[in-house]
Structures are given as C-alpha cells and as structure tokens.
Length: 580
Image (cartoon, rainbow, N blue to C red; front, side, top):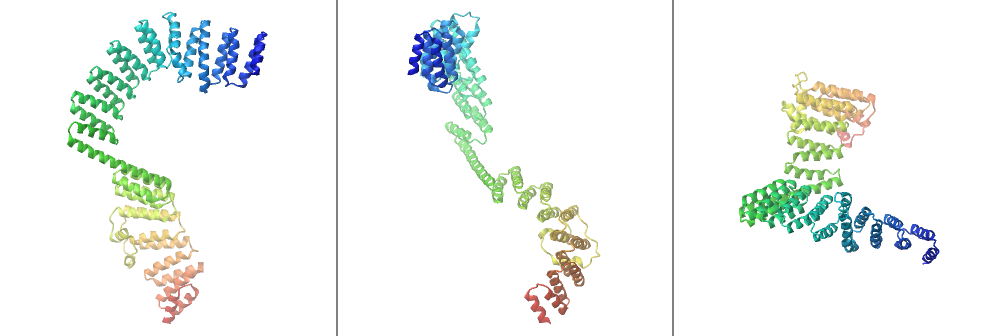
C-alpha cells in the first residue's frame, strides 16, 4: 500500500502529525474500512498517544453501528482500549467501555472468550473502591448479560463473598426485571446454599413483576414441587388464573396439582371455571373431557363432549357469517348476501345484529327500497312498530320522489288496526276493487267512515308525497284510491281536480278524471272533462278516451269522428264500423 510506505517515512522523519493526517484522510474517505483505523492506531501506540487511540476507536464505532463484520474486527481493539484506559486509571470509563462493547457484540464469540478477563477487570476495579462508592458498582451491574454476572459471582464465590453474590444477582434482577435468567441464577444459588425460603421469595417477586409470563409461574411451581409443597403450587396457579383467565396452561397446572392432592371436586370446579371464562374456546372443553376420562367419569365426559360439538358447530356458523360478510364487502349492492347472513343471525336469535346488518345495507344502498323493506319487516317481526314507521320516514326523507316508500309506510299504518269493511279490503289485498268503488259512489251523500288515527297519518303521508311531487300522477292515484276505500268520495274528487289544476297541460290528469267518472257511470261528465282537456292540449289519447265514452253512449257516428283523430287500435275501428 503506497500510503502505508509514505506514513512510515513520515513517522521516521518525526513528522507524526503529517503521518496521522494521511490516515485521517483515508478514514474519512473509507469510513467502513477497518484497516485504516488499525494503521492509525499502530502509529498512536508507538507514540503512547492513549487519548487519541480512544478517540480513534470511538469514531470508528460511531460510524459503523450496523456492520457486524466491523464489530467483530473491532472487538480485539476494544480490549486494547480497555487496557489503555486501565493505564490511565480511568476506572469508570473502563466499565462503560466494556458494557458498550458487550451490548454491541452480544452474539459474538469473542465476547464469550473475553468474559473471564472482563469480569476480572470489573472485580479488580470494584475491589479497590470504597464500599460506599456505588457509582462504579452501579455502572458495573447495569449489563443485560447474565453470563457476565455469573462470571463475576464465580470470582466472588472463590473469595467466599456470599453476601456480595446475592447483591450481584439482586442488582441483575433490578436492572433486568423481566429477564427470567437472573431469577434462575439467584434461585439456583440460594438452593445450593439450602436457602429454600429465600429462593421461593425470589420467584414470588418475579411473578409479581411479571404476572402475564407463564414461565415465571412454571419455574416457581417446579421449585415448590421439588420441595413437596403442592398446595402452594395450587395457590400459585390460582393467582396465575386470576391474572390470565384465558390461558389454559394455568388451569392445567392447577388441575395436575389438585389431582396429586386427590381433590377431585376442586378439579371439576377449576375446569368449569375455565369454561365459564372461555365459552368460545373449544380447547377448554377438550381438556375437561380428557381429565374426566382420566378420572373415570365417563357420563360427564360425554356431556362435555356434546357441549364441545355444539361449540364446534357454532364456530362453523361464525365462519359462515364471516363468509357472507366478505361477500357483502365485495358487492355491497347485492341484497342476496345480506339476506343469507340475516337468516343465520335470525336463527341464532341475534336480533340486534340482524337489524344492524340492514342498517349497513341501507347505508350502502339508501335509494333501494328493498333494503328498507327488509329492515321494516324485521322490526315488524320484533313488534317494534314505531321503529318500523321511522324506517320508512327515513326512506321518504332520502327518497322524496320515490312513490314506493310512501306506499310502504301507508300499508304499514293501515295494518296496525282493524278498520271498517271498506278499509279492510284495502289492507288485505291492496288489489283493485271495482265493486267497492261502485258501492261507495251509489250514495255520495252518506256520512264518510270515521277515520282512525293511523288512517289520518296515511292520508298525511300522501299529502307529503303530493307536496314533494305535484306533477306525478301516481301520487294522486294512490291518495284517491285510499280516499275511496275510506269512503271519502268527495275528497277523492277534490284530489282529482287538484291534480288537473296543478297540471292543466298534462293530458294524463284529464284521462284519470275521465276514467274515474266512467267507472262511476257518469259518462256525460267524463266527456266534459275530456273536452276541457282538449282545450288545453291536443293529444290523441284524449280523442281515444272520448271515443270510448261516446261508444258507451251509443253515439257511434261521433265516436267514429274522434276515433279518426286518435291512434286507437284496429279492433275499436272494426267495432264502430260494424255497429254503423
């Protein structure tokens, strides 16, 4: 390497600064190349520049945090850094350096090889410190590596410093409160010293600090079993169940301990409690079946197995629900997916979920009356009639021009109570009923039937529809139809006239009135209304309607004139010519 030769020449001439600058430049150009750091370190070592050596490697560490190969190569140099600090008497920095090195090289074999030497360094430092000087001790014992603690306690063991060993493990636990290895190490040492109660206290402390970790309970129960303190195993696992009611491991450990104590009824109680806390978890049923079979309680085992089968079927139902929900999410406007899911929910008597399903369908299809109808039908089955009307009100509010929403609300209103005979015929079929039309028109002077509250609401519903849709014939037809069935013939006529008044240039309204008058056998008035319409609009359908009315009056010659002005079919023309 050419630069290496230049550096040596500069160093020989005593130009150390210039030689170092050469390597500094190469380091800056190649931050990840360890060779340049090594060359600079070699010059610094030959000139006893310990501070600069430390700075060099700190810079290298800072710029190579994620390169494991660099760490491995650097590890040996880090030991050299420790030696350098040792020569300078900088004990706290030695410990900080060692801890950082071990943290960065946790999985490196060089750490394993260096631990005895590292522990010796640390012990030597602590040993020469004043007992009250906890600054260095705290820095020493902040490592998360159990291996270092064990090496350090081995040194203390050789020196017979038992109290310091316990202190060391206590510091390890406090600095690594959720690392079970430190509790293992302390417990094993205490057991080896015959201090079983202190070992028990160690695990109790570990459980209090790690209540959700099953390994702490298991390790504690192993120690208690070894000491034949089975009832305490039961108590330990009961505490675990209270903290973790959904983990079957705790129930299993408690059951095993109770079986060993011969407490069969408590075993059953424990299993039943587990099922009560985990009703949807089939593993608890299966486990209870195995234990019951082991205890020779075959009938109880069969009953438990039946419950497990029911739960398994329920799980399959849940899978079906999830399947239909996926279909809904893929195609939100397909009512069939909603209907299939609804049927399952209804069978399970999950009524609120069923209603929520239709709410979701309405949310996604707020202009489709079929979704409102399904929700309304569900509410009716649940006898929640007010909510059913609110459902249709919401539909009308969102779809004020859709006559179907008004129809369904009126139909719902008219189903709530029993009305007079004319009213009932409307409710029962909603079919055309010419006989009732004729019967009601025979005597228009008769008193109209007394209206129920719901009938009044139905009429108001159609009033709202007409105010929102004054130019749509079907709204007038529906209100007139209801009025006739309620015996309100004059009001029906007023409604017809209102339609013509609001739509005087629309021939359909004149035709509507003319047809109604024909049904009431008032042919002359029917023709008069057609004539009024012809004054406003020259429409072939009006001619055809007048032609039919004249035919009924046997005014066939006049009828033929209007036939020629209309687009009526051949059949009517042949009929007229034959009669002539």
